[in-house]
Image (cartoon, rainbow, N blue to C red; front, side, top):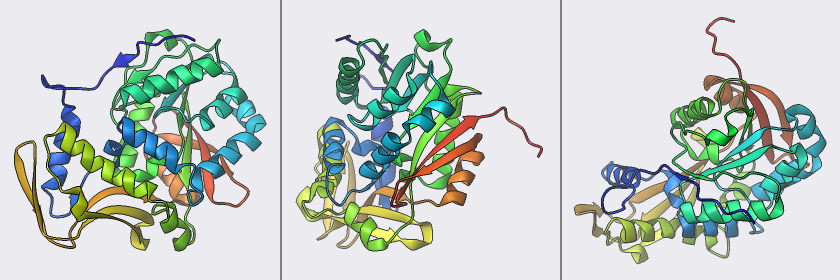
Length: 328
């Protein structure tokens, strides 16, 4: 097994605190509608909890996306071709990533993630499964442009962003992320991206509020992380996980609802919540063909192909970073 030191590009202060995490939490808790960006759900514990979520009977996206990757491997191989550096935005799934790598025969694999330990574990797991494949993990906040390892400078890139993680962001932020991916990967790169589809509300809500309570623990873990890393004293027992369908914005929302009036501090700043107030911790936007294409085009990615699973629940799209133009 190859060992990987990895590149570390997360900004931390002299106390080792992730400065972007602290800024987002303090800013978000100061808003009239308290909200924290969903990316901070994914520390090491959160990443493991999400892997557990993907195995739940209610959570269909992973099974649907895996079906597409397995059943359309020949089409991926034809449209993507061999010899690319696969740059995955987020540590690789133990199931989905190997299916893609097996289909297209890449020249290198570069996983990007803000969770360092989980990143390196995923990199070592992929090295064991593909012993001849160079693996270059990068610990980085991929919401911004990332400097890729020099070892892949001469290779064409394929970005891989599965799981409909793009749906966690409001449209403005999603377009910013896709533009940053374009800058990271370069003109001529391809992007294979998962986008979940609009469907029955009961199916959607159940996927984010499972009977076993794993998704609730995933949500509570963010509060535990804040208490641990930012000297917080949030009373987690006063908060209740809730998943809501917002039809106006075509999204599932995850909230933590205050069951009583509470006061707490984070990094020396005081906050309060009235009973019924919430901390909005995640959006999961759902798409159709038109909204998927519009999102990609707004960020400079030209859609090339779209695949659905057999039940029409989930989509994978392939797009190319074409030279920028302002005329038809």
